[in-house]
Structure formats: C-alpha cells, structure tokens
Length: 84
Image (cartoon, rainbow, N blue to C red; front, side):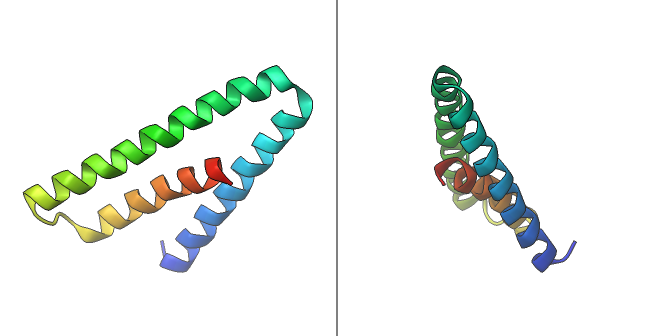
C-alpha cells in the first residue's frame, strides 16, 4: 500500500469517526455522554500505548521502521478522530 493511499485511508477514517460522533450527539444526549466516555477512554488508552511503545522502542533499539510508522499512523488516526 502506498504512503499516499494510507494517508487517504487515515483521513477517511477520521472523517467517518467524526460524522458518527456528531450523529450520536444529535440523536440522544445520554447516548452522547456514554459515547464521549468511551471515546475519552479510547483516546487515553491510545496515548498510553504510544507512550509505552516509544519507551520500549528507545530501550530495545529500532525495530522495523515501516511497521512502527504504520502502527503509529493508525493510532494517531484514532486520536485525531476522537478529538475532532
């Protein structure tokens, strides 16, 4: 998969997540509050995973850079979608 295609996929995923959250917010306030809690938990978990993997990466040396970049891009897409 090319880098340009991967970036488009990440941007599309962020747009879909944002649209989904907006729809939930318009439908029901209680459901919106529950989903906000879930998204906050997901964001914090993602940030913790990024932090832990960065520490492990710096301690153990550099694994395959391409795999790390792909994983990081997916995690950042989740964070971008939940914070937008």
